[in-house]
Image (tube, rainbow, N blue to C red; front, side, top):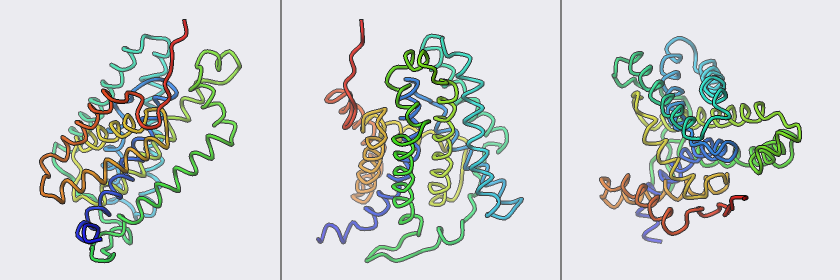
Length: 294
């Protein structure tokens, strides 16, 4: 109990950051589940959503800026898939991966050009940026909202995948891409829907994540994106519950490490965890072992 009281602020912060990682990690894990592609540009889509919020909030009210940012983030994900990945559908997997890296650097360089490399101040969002007290901890309301919203969105996503026609098509494509195509499933529509959902969640994650920080820089998506990717691998890439559980574990552990005064090692912990998982259990916590058909 003493440990809990002393570390309550760090546990709350860890749950909040974990929820934000989870929203990004779902995008990684869904795209990998369908295409077997690690979408390296996903963290940069998250960053672009943050920058759009900075600029739009100066030109219009927040109640108009927030839906516009989410809509344009979805559009960005859709366009990237259609322009950079769809033409390479039948190309070797390495070609698609290089295309993803290229899109990542393109987005970063465009952001660098627009911002001039300077940090842009993220606008405080009323109500969710307010300070509240929970027990002995003082924190922003977004810390409480993030895990609740994350769980609601994940439940909605699981229902969509299990009980809707497009969800059934997603599961079929993730099981056997070629057979799903032969059975008449519109592969391109399924893949586009996957990118749209992943980008929407990245947009929501961006709103929650940057509310805790004062500024957005062109490389702001790199580290959260990498940690979300590690969370997806930790949970078992391709598994949505696995990505969520992995993200919360990483977020809480990182925050507790910072609370112990070892902030320098908080990032190192995440990547050390990735190495341990790849060595000890390559399929992750909830990943399924697959076998190649001969």
